[in-house]
Length: 457
Image 1 (cartoon, rainbow, N blue to C red):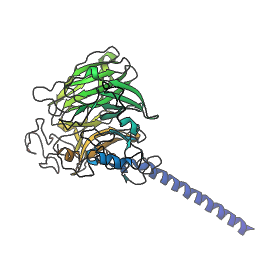
Image 2 (image 1 turned 180 degrees about the vertical axis):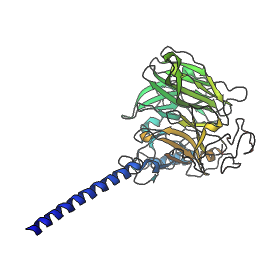
Image 3 (image 1 turned 90 degrees about the vertical axis):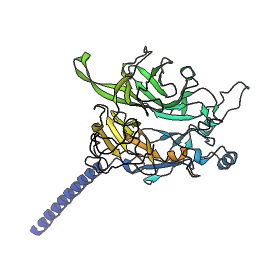
Image 4 (image 1 turned 180 degrees about the horizontal axis):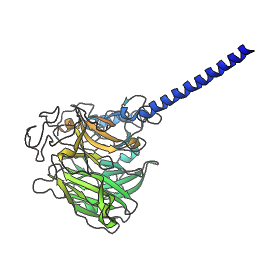
């Protein structure tokens, strides 16, 4: 009797110990999983390991024979299909603008929808919203040139509500001066990405001239002031501000300044924390549209936070003199602006809540010799993503038959004390006017691991 009671007590003790061991193991497993980056739903990969590689050689065709027929007719030339701008939905769907610089681009707006099983994938690019939207429609009469739906998309943007905005310049063969064809006035299209339908089409003919060069688009959807579309026009030196609710637009002039000249115009929307004197000195977050030219010395902003449905004009405000050339790539939709200096492909960041000084710049990405980052945007799960490619080879005429290779990855956050992402200190490799400087001298200390670099753009 005593032996049986002892055995039962021993079994109960073993079961209790086993239960405790299982509980501890489960706790360790949960902690380990929480420390890993969040996996993508349905994929099982951490977000920071996803890499998308896209090119003009990987397009989705409606019919197997369409590719052969388009190649024979010259409507498809793989080397001429170049993704230059990207927008990403919160769930990971990617939209690409592929401008018609030269003949051979079968569709100018594409989408990537895939369920990868590996960390590096080469998905095909699908025509968006469909292939028919990029083909010329039969003319009703000889005087009707408005027979295209999508002519030439040069930039895309996904707003906070999930609408996809596409900037269509309305003319093709942009790099072939003798063969450039104006099909119709420039337009902005808004797509419902859930139904893939056009929900809004904005004609920009009233806000543009023959000298206009439209380059990029941003959208601000404010609950108090409505919805505004911003389009950069580097040809006339203006930012076109379109009030969607009132169907009215006006222009904000962006001066190049005495030390610069007009060229590529960069826009970036960022939120800055300021003190509101009217509210008793309390903090308030303001939305600003930062603008600058690639060959100008000043960073400016447009106080878009002050707009409402009655606003018909605004003026730029100078933030400060740029410590270096700043090729603006995008933002995290918060207070951080990402950019390159032009001296190499390294990506730096500047928090707009700090003064525009070199010591407030941070390295966040080391450059690759074969690819140059040209865009940063918020995307999947709110992470910033960047796009890099060898597009410079295309404009130099040094590209193979497969075309430009474009890679899309998550932008990692800066790591303190990293040997290739140090604090920028008091020096930035390239001054504002583009002239080369020594890495040592008046502008500060030598950047760790940095000497003279070959200019990539």
